[in-house]
View 1 (cartoon, rainbow, N blue to C red):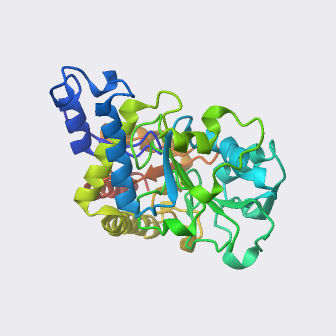
View 2: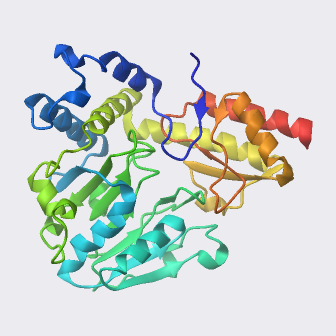
Length: 360
């Protein structure tokens, strides 16, 4: 079997060594005569798996001790509701920087639980850039300031971390977590769906400053209350055990690659190669402001869009999968998360040049 290159935005490509280790351990994990999927989440063995995953993540991101790490379910989208439920109880409005589909969805969900205000938006520009630092003022009475560092659909990435003063900064890092070093202490809360840079779908990561716990709105469901989950070690109910196990393997792999710093260098190299190919071409174009181009999700449009289906068909035949753009944007999109090797981007670039030569 030959694995192709999967450019899907999520569920995304996983590192091949991780898949191979999981395959080898699948029927009999560590000589226990059963799969890790069959272990009780209360068993000493699985608790060790969970603790290992958390410890590796803390090491990779240098998470301070005054932050809780939660392994939850429901995807990042469920956190659009859980975050206001947990943070609005202390008073103040939820405030947002709106730069794309996912930040817009977060605004709409937060409005169900209290006041939600957009401080700045690039919607009028079709979300083709991020909000700039001089385009908004932080409300010092706000409960939190939310932004999406990388918008998966539009391919827009912030080139700075917003300064929020004493207002907790909340970041949806679903498509950029672990892709470069971050200063966790800059944030009050970080959350991310796993299915892009962490592991399989079904797991959601929340890193939250402990001082923000215990302020949930009355009526917040037990499972969505971060304080409950922190106290129970993310096991108020049965966690997604296999996804936690795989996340731990991915964290091990990331450590072996050199961690977020090494990933940042590799991701810069991969994205520069693809953007250079697009920019040097008269056949492809990228609509995003150069300073806000994503390193993780790179959309591009063919000069002749009647060739879209031909492009996708030929790409799949060449082992380059899931390059279609999101239905709301169209065109093509290459998601090149941590697990995508440089060789995969090079294969895509070679195909694009050949396709342009034949159809341009």
